[in-house]
Image (cartoon, rainbow, N blue to C red):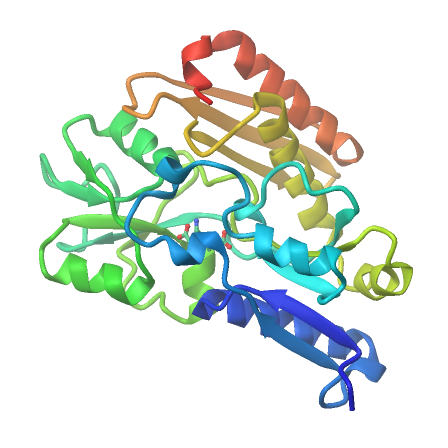
Length: 310
Ligand SMILES: NCc1[nH]cc(CCC(=O)O)c1CC(=O)O
């Protein structure tokens, strides 16, 4: 039988797990999609997967992990694409939309320390932290200017091997990915947002499709998590307002109160951590995107143009 739907995904272990989760949720929500062969997973190699030797912030350009997959949606060789929302550019290509956000995993960052330190504050003086994320670098240095940062990429296994070998004393990874991979065993500490504010949309999985594909959009409606949608809307509209890019350390996390109040905390920093600005504001969840835009405008007024390097 020819597949009913084709899901495009990167080939990393985490991406494949996220695509499988999407297939499972589609099958649970729609019995017609539960039959074998109804939903096919197609692995696409992206530029971000090809370049391993340089920090991604150096390569520049947007959508390093998404372009080739989005091309597949646009040429109709794919129907759905599953993405980590934190890797998604703020502007989608014309004709594509995020049709659903799956329930968000824990958005916090995890610390791996060779000596088992339980916080950034507890790392030994002068410790070497491996991270290629400017957001993590800036926040580590803001709290601990004595630490040194070295570029650090690779999958979880590679990173832990380098940690064991003493190449670095500590590294940071998103807890969400580790949970999905079942690799939380060696986490030294989960960092609270006060210590390390996550990236916008960290832990959220988005499913992209063609805007005019009404049947697929109906299928995706059943998978959409409204709480995640509102939180991610606030966090990503902040990025848009700041014209955020890979060279600008920006962090954002929205939380929902029981009464439907959304609270957005955001930070913008210089990469060396010498300056960091925080904004916190609350509003009704229905105005999530506007709240994010206001936070972005407020931060923009406080920081100089040197924060926003193209
Ligand atoms: N930048 C890479 C990336 N993109 C998504 C995740 C996994 C966590 C998530 O779903 O946000 C990671 C790894 C990491 O930052 O540790």
